[in-house]
Length: 482
Image: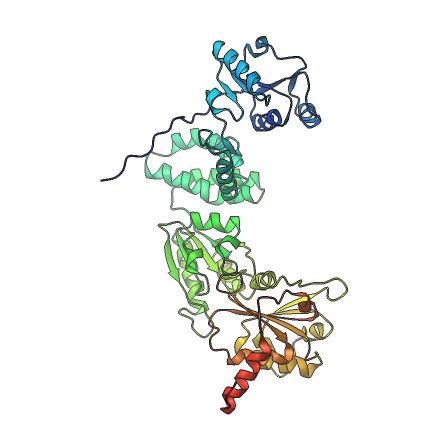
């Protein structure tokens, strides 16, 4: 048998304050905090105090608020719809609270719950949309923490989208029957093309596509978001990526994307793994392209979730071309690429004034051909080189760069599972790099960073590559390592 839900002692409501007087009594930090909160509304603010601190005085001037420069008197409360006692003095706040109640005006006394008729919430403002978080005065810091999380989740353009929606409400009620047709329109309005246009700062296009959506009776168009999942840690996912995951009908994801990141998507979204791990592809790239086009034509909102950043060794170019050819709407949501996460794990500056001012992103397979790629000369001249997917060709990478003139003593940092708690870090020189090929225990994605700037990394919690080189050599010759 389910337990009854807890009862609220304070019921949340939204009170009309447009053009109405709201009085704040006090001149210090408490009054300033309330003024900033109420300043997000269209109320007519009046500050009552014979002395205001400079910061509050500046706020009053900047926001055209009223100021009664006098000692408190209950007469100043008359006509107000709300009163805030924010003097910082318990006795004075009690007097103000008593006066407000006598006049029939709801009152809030800062940090004095026993004197409050109502509690001010932590507010997420996307006017006219507002999210208010309250704890009945029990935990203001907790309310602020929750507010911060919700604020990050909601697009900054959501308020503009709500204003636009209000202008279409009458038309939707006239043209669309109740039930699924109307619900489908509003779902597409708030998560489809109109919302995307406003996120991209295109209000006129948002209105145009919303009008077209209202006139159209056929099924909605699909949209594909090529989303960077980052290097693996869930909290490195961008806010925009998270919003797309929460709106997706289908999530198409690579094998390197951790389950914890996929799980951040909408609970009832269909999840389709497509492999794309080195040496083990459950679907070819052509099959993935065809799948995305098919889902788009079905009117699905799809997140194509790629490890790191979609545009860095993610083959996003082929998928974008297929979607363009099929006239399927798409967008790219950048992610934190593995090189940046690996550098952060090592506290490693990828560029360093006076040492290196350029860097190269490459895969180890770029160095397997007969001729060196053009970027090799940059490495030799001091650029930092980030090598993706290079464990199995580490010896090739090292020998080719050394043969080309890069010093064997050049610093090297290696990270398996960058950004995750399971990461492993190794350090050494270019001469030590071939030992990576013998590390069969490294099953996660490996990032190698090479260059003079690597010497500035923090190697305190990393293992030396040199020891692994000797162990690998002994294993190949059958020697015993003490």
